[in-house]
Length: 527
Image (tube, rainbow, N blue to C red; front, side):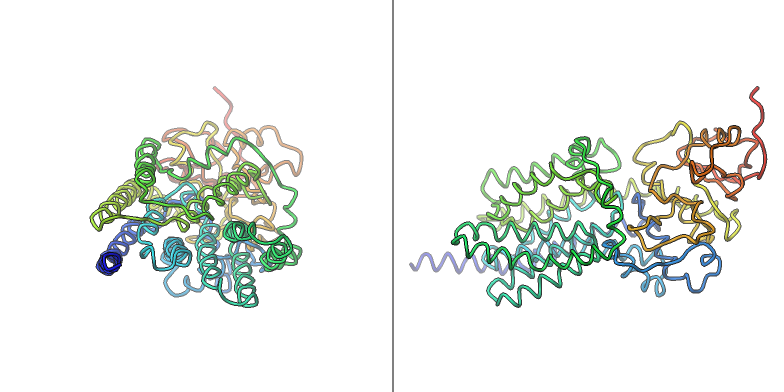
């Protein structure tokens, strides 16, 4: 008994000594993860520049007559509003570029701290401060979903982690208190992103399921009903939401299932994905093999439930692409909260934390190396905007045969939306799909933007539409010579001119060209 007490005191002493070290290590790792944001003006995440432009419109629409000419804000019950609510007030204080990066930083911090909070709520204090859990979350932060720029969804993951932790911390409180907390969480998550509500529901189910199986069936049903009651608020909210108009846009496919798993370790360069991914998985496998890492019963339930959900989930749901492919990343962060570590010595604990930190540093360094060249292209795009008349209309197109790296092209695909910020222009690719965003385009210009989140026209299609006019209403861009002042062609190469005779080249940068449209001109005859 005395020996046991001595061991307990020794273990407690080690933990008290490790707590400051783990705190410093965690803050250092967080600084490393956030570091790439300080090297660029616009983080080159696929959808991010488009979201950033909408933040600028929301913040400045009342003071910008040119923006008022094209755009309006229609506040509705849309389960995709986190950035729209949080960022515009910051834009008025620090500017749109800093405000956007602060929101990305908030995403990272919410996921990291949410993972830590979930671990603490589930395991209490007896298994340490959860530093390794938070570090592992940082190691996987720059994943494929993050690089796609799904900001509202990612912010929803962080809040779902915190909501689950709060729900766990109230497990010994009254049903009324838990009901109130869960209802508030569901409401907040609905505003962030509809999929975040589903993630929170899955987490609560997995946590409660083992206990339900041990109860008499009447008590189990009663408890299950109380557990599901907060989620009923989603029904009237969805009924009042224009998002329901997208309910028929559902597509299921096997194609994206493997891609969703790859998103866990995605970087801009595929040759880095395998070694960094294997390094991360190797650390996890070593911890499991040596019984230094254990998964809570709810974690095993999460793996089973998540796998079934992943297979069943459509690729497109409510008109949102990558619906199923988002799930592995969300489950990873949630699952890390269900993990506990059992390091048998202080040295072993420090070695494991140092190994994870090394992966964090490697991934952040790789990300900075990828972002810096892209940042120069973004700067070149912004510089080209000096030739654009304020309040112009701009069509975004792509080369008939796209050139360049696929990842580079994706990261740069919404950069033309910077013209909204810099030149108060109408850009054809601005996100304004009914039911997805609160941004709308004035009726006089509605037919000049892509309202279906489709692909931009190719320059070959544009030339063909001039020589062989299409029936009215075939494409939003078909009368491009009449409707637009400028064309930005993406995924092209220097010296390649497909719009000669129809538009004058104004600027040529890496992977893009800016043209001024020659209204009513006809293409030169082929030699």
